[in-house]
Length: 170
Length: 371
Image (cartoon, rainbow over all chains, first blue to last red):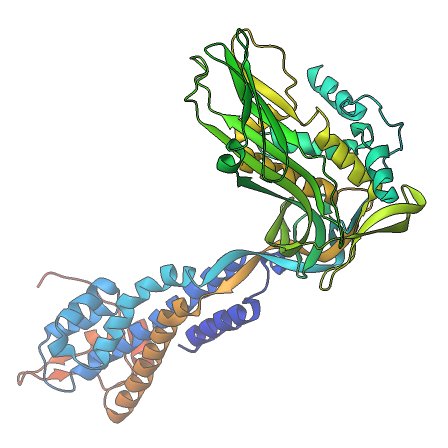
């Protein structure tokens, strides 16, 4: 159980440290998702080891009071997996107490892996870079340096535009 | 008035209009999508948080059909077309031709030659023009009943106040543009890197905006261009029509006066920003990154199960301590094998601890047999 709590704490610390940072900063050999997934699996397995042990001990404690021998099978199956745990839940009146909690944890542990996958999300963003600058041009004045020509010069399209048009044609 | 003559008369030729500006005018009128490649530098995502006031051009158009058609005067010809002329409220003269069932004026574009000097100074208006539009059926012949419309338009210098400027992947976006009308400007001598010392400039200096100037030569060139037959002209529809001087009348006929003027103003504004005298507004550069976002709520199940597991463990330990006769056999099968049910129906468990049992089972051999 301690190992399981340790794994969960490791996940929390990891997420706390990396929340809001950029993925580009992640330099570990495995990706963030793989690391979270590995820690989650470890937390789940160690949690179920502890729960299974509690259920098995509960089996003996259950017979402190007189009970049907069938309970031995029910406890045994519940400690082995979700199907047995479900059977125990269905007979909750007989096994009300810590055993019910153990059975519920065994069943709900199935959802840990998919749910924890949703913990980390990624979104596109932008990070200011001080070493580079950006600009856009603006005009407060306009002076093209137009040449002075004689009055009465023939009206025509500017020569540079004619060149552009000719380039388009060719 | 000498100054006006100098500016107006000496430069009344489109030859000296800035070729880039002339190209911008045509681009605005004829290109489907006005493609301005802004002069900016940003290779990722950039933002300019400030407010930037720049020199621009704005265009307005007003429908003056009723007032103008009221001035229409026509001159009949016994065997030829009927020529009409009219004048818009802003004083632009328009001439049209109509030859029943043969051809007629579909579009006429003309500019005003009146000066733009007032008692307060120089008007920021750089062109006044009018557009006559007649919807002639392109298949049939021109008829008297074809609808006519007349528009008075103007292009003026304006101060554009840009804010929320940003760029993303080589696309510059100006978030908001506020147009501030310019008051009359003053003509004065300025040192100009392109025109040399003591060049005439129109200066617009009003509170709240930076000083905006326009070279008098370029103002003259603008006026010359808009008055020339490169801009003004007539489009005829029908058959056996004389070769007209089209100018830009066809572009106005295709787009409509308002749309054509708006495109003209936008293209000219864009061209202004790229002229050699433009400055640079510096902003902040950002690099595209992938941010890690933790959604803590999805961790709730794991934490809740850890809490439940801890409660279970502590509860089981406490319960086991209270029942000292029950050893921590947990899932031991040996303990189960060493247990039996006596005649009174009591489950008699072994008294040995799990460790002792483990030692015992190592020395015991067994074989399954049929009962």
